[in-house]
Length: 395
Image (cartoon, rainbow, N blue to C red; front, side, top):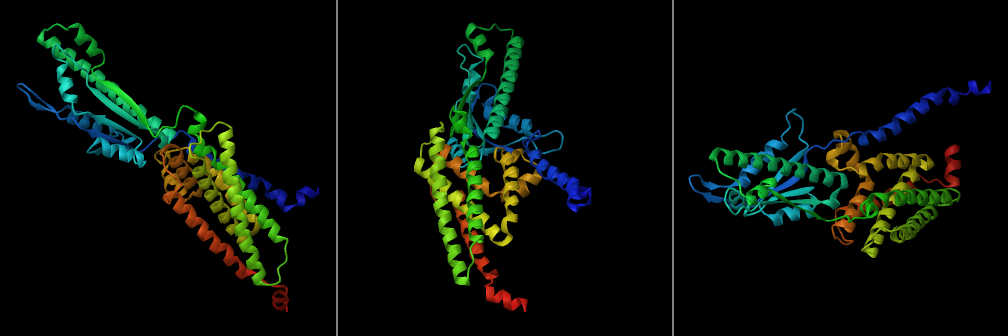
């Protein structure tokens, strides 16, 4: 049969195996992700209290020591969370707004004083504040909140045991107020900053919007490239003019895609608080991606398209993950080089952190990608040959 005489037919099993392996690699990041060194900020504002026969007691420092021991890994591996001390509540909130931490644990000034009151006739349960940074990453902030809630629950259990043991040794009776306070010796105040809202669609908006924008960038770049490939140019000047028109057309495509996607997202229920800023940022992102794809196609031809399709499959699982959940390979070698990462980071700033469309890290990176891609596109004119030059080369 002719089929078995074809080299491509014999190579098909190998080709299929390569495809399976390549796209199978995209599943690795999402298989049982475990956090490593998830940064959580710890603030101890406790001023301590003077207790007769004991002197100055500062329970905040005691809790800090307990937390550091809790965070240490007993297996020798990197710990799941990493506690970083801040000198004040304001410094911690600033770090949360700068996306340095996933959550904060705050010990207030009167913690020791209230904790000491639990042994008296007028007990007041001390309070610990947990601040969860929702906007930074859903999985990361949820994990950080779970860890901090578990730590406070464990502290409650330890303090309750210590108080009951102390009363038992003293042979004293427990009043009704004390018994009520012993149920929860430490109260928790849990709050969120940079909130994503109760609408899950809005919380996933930065990740959800990247795929249609990325596919629009690929489609636009391919259409313009195929259109130009059918045109015959007599001189390099004509070719350069066509490339310049390609760059201008990309700007039009980007504006249509950016504003169109923002309008559609708003229409289907995503809360768009800054329509103009989000639309402009999506337009910049689309333009940057359009130029980057066009730059590759200008040198490789249509064969370069699979690069960006694979990038989509590799990037999708990583965008939803915090870097601390990734394996070292993906965190150090794949994630930093994903251009779509800057799209998601910029959208997080706009959606959850109250930022405006301005010159910041995501916009500067996307702008430099666009500028570098333009240089590569215009440089492709150097490989152009007129018909006369081709005839001379053939002789």
